[in-house]
Image (cartoon, rainbow, N blue to C red; front, side):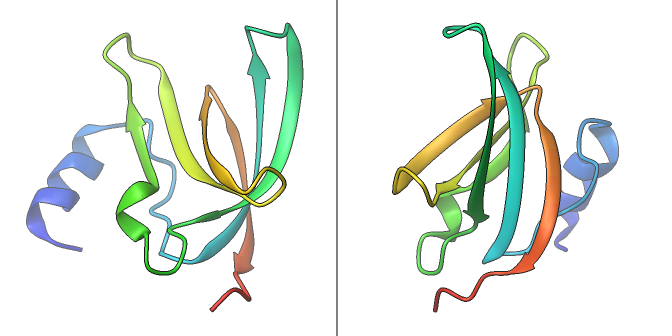
Amino acid sequence: MDKEKLKEFQLNPHYEVELKPNTKIAVGWYMNKYQAFDKRVGIFGKKGEEHKSRQYVSKSGVKCITFWDTLRNRYTTATNYILNIIGESEVK
């Protein structure tokens, strides 16, 4: 982990774990727009597009994750999420 990323990781208590590229994950979150809970399986750091997936904290202090949604075949952002790491993705 480079020094800038390490500093950001240490200063931000919202990061539970650093996800490696091409990691298969299950993400659950409450969708305010639809007043419903959703759970999706996806890939963090899709092969060749690693820079599009990220974990961050919004300006309003809400933890967020952007990942490749394998159900919808597009990137999805979840807020105040629950994360389960499934393992390394089989997509090459």
